View (cartoon, rainbow, N blue to C red):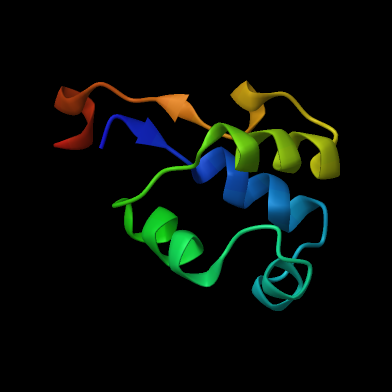
Length: 73
């Protein structure tokens, strides 16, 4: 996958967002959250905007581009 969301998961943890709180506040749906963790999903612009608002950050704080050749290492 070319987009990595590891930054998002680190930021959520730093700001005290548990999986339960994420689901309760409807920040990210359970299916989307699972897909992101498995590296099989992505976020739409509406969700990115909401995350940036709630976490007080910029889109680059949530994700990064990882070339395919780096994923194989």
